[in-house]
Length: 390
Image 1 (tube, rainbow, N blue to C red):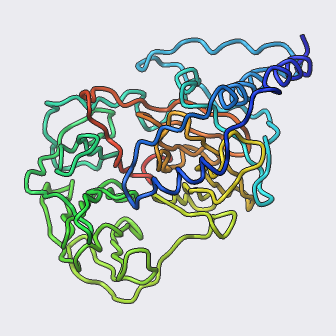
Image 2 (cartoon, rainbow, N blue to C red; image 1 turned 120 degrees about the vertical axis):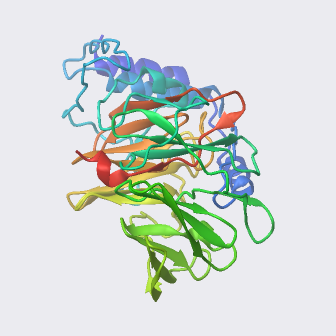
């Protein structure tokens, strides 16, 4: 059966299935939004969404000759096999603001993606009772493990360069609250781990707790009430704290806790495709390629969901978008993790890390988080993105 014949058959199958109501999805999405809080929003998109997404997956699995490509051989997390990104070009599914867009497969299909080896291990063990952190080495990631609806701090697990996980003693960390008394993130979407993995900041109501992995010591940086939630790293040695949440002017501090400068401007690198796109998480800049995660203003033509989230990447001076539906993923599902190659960017999805070969529809599995107790999550993970590009 030719590729075109298969596509025609699949199109006939979904032709009479009604698409979800974009307005109602829009309304539910907007109602659920909450700054720096991951809400687990389940949107029932119906059979049409699954079928359309499945069409894209099946079509991508065909070779240029029209025959099914062989399934990737199974690989255990400790196996030596390396799956490299395919260099075969793939036509985009649609465009958004003139930028080519590929729709990611639904969350339920992620387990079938081929593995891509990287600086990150295939399995990250977040089980309780991990041995304590030993000072003297940087880390690749930090995972705050807490209850799904936690208002109190949980435990912090760190990922070492050799792929092991250890627990960071942070018993003195208190719950972080916003101006209205709501629980706020301890390690914000902006990323609490420094790009080189040597320092971690944890947001508090009126301060930042800064941990040095080299010495195993804590430093406190006093901040105005509620503003540590908006802090971010400008580089591996400089923390920027906004003068107002959502503002672009702030003060900078060194890793010794000293104030460096006031009235420092900082903001979105304008990766956004349209004026309404809203960034979240870090943006990762490996020199020329740059990528970030966005709530897309939308709607994105040709997709099953209105106002999806998306990974926006700029490579070789050109922009590309990977659109992510809400099929099994929560709001703020997919913050960028880091670059794994010149055109391969990693991002979070569900309890794991995926990678996208920018400019194609090809996705890979990179890591899966294991050992989480029932009712626990690690939504505020932070990554040493400079250390991932090896």
